[in-house]
Amino acid sequence: MESVMSANQSLKDYRIEVADSLAAIPAPTWNALLARQSVPTPFMRHEYLSALTTSQSATPATGWKPQVLSLWDDSSPETLLAACVVYLKTHSYGEYVFDWAWARAYQEHGLPYYPKAVIAVPYTPVPGSRLLATDAVRREQLLAEALALCQAQEVSSLHLLFGSAEDQVASQSLGLMSRHTVQFHWLNRQPMPYLDFEDFLGTLNQEKRKKIRQERRKVVEAGVGFRWARGRDISPEDWAFFYACYERTYLEHGNAPYLSPDFFAAQASAQPESWLLFIAERDGKPLASSLIGLLETESSQVAYGRYWGALERVDCLHFEACYYQPLAWCMAHQFDRFEGGAQGEHKMARALMPVNTPSAHWLAHPAFAEAVSRFLDRETEGVSQYLSHLNERSPFKQNPGT
Image 1 (tube, helix red, strand yellow):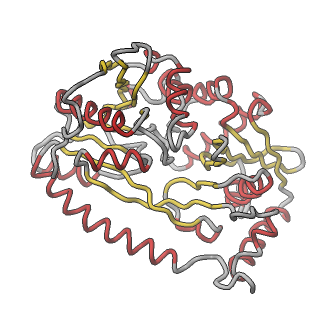
Image 2 (spheres, helix red, strand yellow):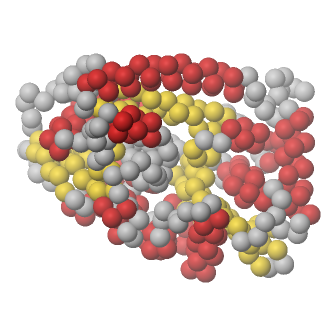
Image 3 (cartoon, rainbow, N blue to C red):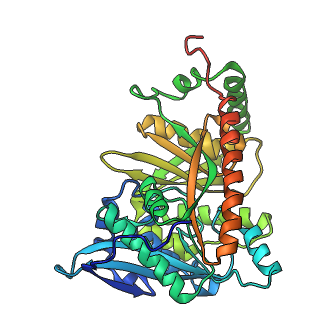
């Protein structure tokens, strides 16, 4: 492997700061730097990351110790050149890039895998910019300083999860190992976006078109309808109902929810424009909901499937709340993309297509790094074959004219 300290740092023209809270950087300064990135998702905004901590959802007590690393211009002390949050982790929950086997291998050899470090958004497997920087050089310098911080603290490893293409370039320049997973995203038609849901259905093969219509019909025949609200139009009562659904879903799977009510209260107050809520109702009574994140800039209009829950079981309600309602909304509002979240091959039947989502990894122990590198070579080949196999099963018509 290449040296992890190959960034151009011979002449540093910046000062380094490490803080235990994002409060050390003013929100406008952080958000302005985020806005300059290629994929400025709402989940990297100051308000979102801060709420994870202040709501006690992602703190040292829950296994996420934040270290805010920032580079500031020596000649202009108020100018932020680059920044990221490095979390020290005592477990591997809430990451969605699974390294449990690596942790077991360390344990079997009598070595500690935890604490480790991650550059990620807790509980949020959404691809986007993680290394915020004014340019490629600063991005590489930031990552090199993060690696130096990890080495100084003698952590086992550093993992940059769901980063942007620019983050991946910086990682490869510094010798980090690449890993690939698969997500499923829906893309609006270009250059002429879909007119409506029926126009979209017309591009699918007969089998998938029939299946979707059957699933939607079951929800209608159950007497269930939907309403949606965005931003400050989401009422406190709507937020409270959503949380009841969200909590119920986690508890039904035997787990406490990762995120607290205070986290969503902070979202409703500090960045309401980032959220779209669908509520399923029958006879005026709410019974399920799905919460969608939104990114809307001059160049990108993206919706992100995030959370869902139901207080009552209705056949196919999950598909309607989490896919069909959001897709119809995206078409009506001419959004470019809907990202369905981590994993879930079943999403292809709803026309969410597979995409490669990379991450980057550094292990301090040379022998383990070499073993993991060999494993990733094999895994990458397997993921490539898997993607090819999935694309052969496209739900779209092979001949659009039929």
